[in-house]
Length: 164
Length: 219
Image 1 (spheres, rainbow over the protein chains, first blue to last red):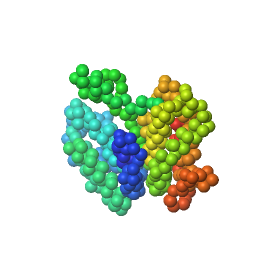
Image 2 (cartoon, rainbow over the protein chains, first blue to last red):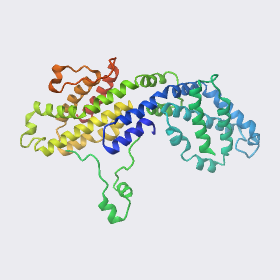
Image 3 (cartoon, chains in turn orange, brown):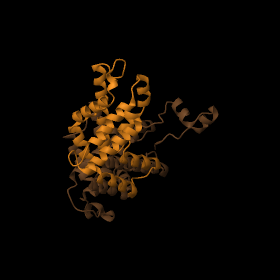
Image 4 (cartoon, helix red, strand yellow):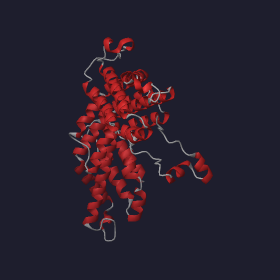
């Protein structure tokens, strides 16, 4: 799982040396920014269901045709699955905030996603709309502190860019 | 002595015109290491198994890691800065307690084999320093302890002596981290790390647990 610590340790191990001062400084920098990340993760976890519901609603409002017969959301089962997937993205973003890197999104959310969506005939635009809505809806200090919000939005943007 | 890393068999790959990686996989030697985790990604992996977000109480231990971050870095530094002293003292101490090791037929005779022993001590200590930095034992397990006992047995290394050397390393390292070393214990090599005084008991216990893990894995 890619994070600052594992990257540093992998490099040190490849060279067969003990962690150097540079390595310790890199970890220290990561730790200094951790408070904001953990705050964002905590707030997101607490509001995960609401965030997911609002994002899904926004997506079906914008692309109402999705619920027409033959489209990706033409039955309640399929609509539920769309909300579930959005919940997964939010959860992976929560994990990224914990780890302090894009490892969880890369390994569990993005790798293979393009192929899966193409096979299932799912529009990635809808996911982008939902994640964009969440990004623009979140605001500081109502939802979380500005620094925490900055961390949260950067991972939302990362997911959006990966899907588009 | 121990073949620590398998060097890529370029001879084989050359004759078959394969890349080293393909050749390694054909020989069933993994070319990709198992995942390495730190305190944060460990929480994430266990949360993913429940498809639940990380929140609430699980964050408390992570906040502790963040809060004591500087202490942890000082602890890693205490090990790395004194690595040579910790390792050489441990191997010397092991031999002093069992002088048969350096007599003809002993496992630290001749110097070539004692050098291998010193090298292994340093490797073990290095992986322990990685684990302490990460706050998780996975890197130690995956890259150092996995198969270590079997290798030692196959090579005829006495695991009891190896375990004793690790336990001496534990005493030295934990004393340096917790700054509980005394001139009486340290003798001519006495040294106190110049860090801010504070409560390091949690880190001392954590570092000790990694040494115990090594001892448990090879005995």
